[in-house]
Image (cartoon, rainbow, N blue to C red; front, side, top):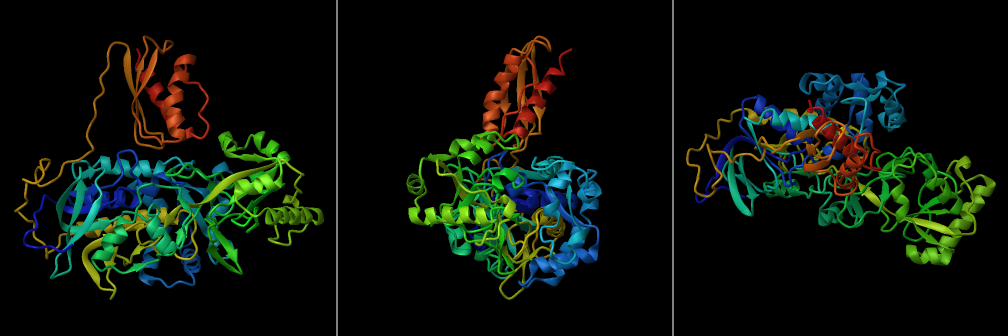
Length: 607
């Protein structure tokens, strides 16, 4: 939207950051460190901010040889065009990731190549070299905050960097951005319109606006228009709805990478189909039993459509020598027989046993085809062909390894509904190596910056950890550049304080505040940040350490599926056993750890 004479400003900041994920948190931190008063707004409620960074594996791309990194990322980008200065800035940043973590995040990084015998390094070796046929791949590496993954460790650190600067950074949850405000004469971005408690507020930015709103995974219309798909299910944040693309388009920004996205899960990005509106919970790729034997994956017509044993590459599958995201099936299924069902049910490596609760049993192929909504003759021929491949030890359809082929028995059969998982989109406004957004003529739109998955430079191929690295590298650049004082815009002294009761000192206040929890006799407060949400706070009633009478969860923001199950069940089990030494809730290891840690923290206060 354009600035006009009737526009009333509700507040003024030096820098406004849209999106409180990995890129936004990084940008806000570095803007504050360069003297800016910063506002972060996010559409998610507290405890669900973090974008896809919260849910990512927490591994970051890097490499020990700068020239190899250049070659590898050039090959990853091929055959799409890219900004060479932007790529060089990124590659230099990748090379410096270990130093970045130590200098700016205060951790001794876990560099996987330096720990080849670690179970984590072994499990993720394939991802460190996701495209082993490309140049430079041998020295590409993954770096983590510690020897652990999928625990939000990076996100928690980035969030804490913001909280430590609460005197310089205001954070507003459940406050989505609506429009950028642009000077009609200079085309400079001078503010943002946000929605707070159903009220529109105009907030001025003296020096810059940084868009870090992520992609459009949760916007079905955009997914259909840009990706050409109708049946993808998000794995990460449920709040990435493409608002950054809409706002960038309104001010004339050039868009790119709009058709590229990454998938994740077992096989080539498949996950068990969740309830409508729920995030996908993927099955791990390193579960051998689910890739071999009398088990196949079939698409919408009841036929196989890939090698079920092939290692996935974030959903990319080989297509006549090229690696592309496969066309998503509307209702794919994993199909197996009784002996495979028994094997899976008794497999101690199963990620969470509840997944078998969703399996449908059918006594014969006619009933199975009806459940799957496929043609029974095609399904019958698919099983017949597969059994023949198992007999002759040659998969003539997809060349699956011979030792993974086992013929199906004659019923009963089992089917598990799957869905193609959407990890993240990559498209958005084009930005240069200084994180400045450009228009369709490649001219910089003054004072507008972008970082993260909103306009990522990741193109045709993708190596795991690349987006998290991009968040750190360009979040820092965006924050530093946005904080620089701009001569074109002077601080406006005519802030309208009548239109918002919460305005003070030309700011909007912050949703981050110190909290106090009441206790009575024999009650103790315990806290932990080990879960997948923000802080878990418990109140434990215990006359002594060996007499736990009650546990109340005062604050938590764990996921609504397995995390919430741990929140409901674990306190009761601890009280019943009178000990924190209870079993972890399956599928909720991080939430379980946090609850037990918080209770232990409370008990430690008993004299």
